Length: 91
Image (cartoon, rainbow, N blue to C red):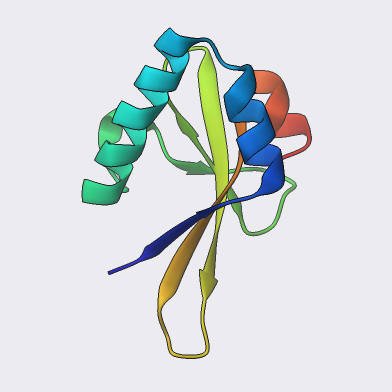
């Protein structure tokens, strides 16, 4: 079972979201945990940012993440940023 972690930047970004977007984000992350490849998340690699991926919470709000394998071989998803599409500039 993969692990899930949040960077300080992600936590800071999340706190700036209004309640409606926070609820949409929670729903998207539950879906991500069940099926990271779910079509409604629109998961994709970010061009120009090696090892960083993006996904959608809504049409206008997105998140970025990276993957890490531990020494034990476990997979950890690091949620890096969340917000409008400008987070793709500094994912």
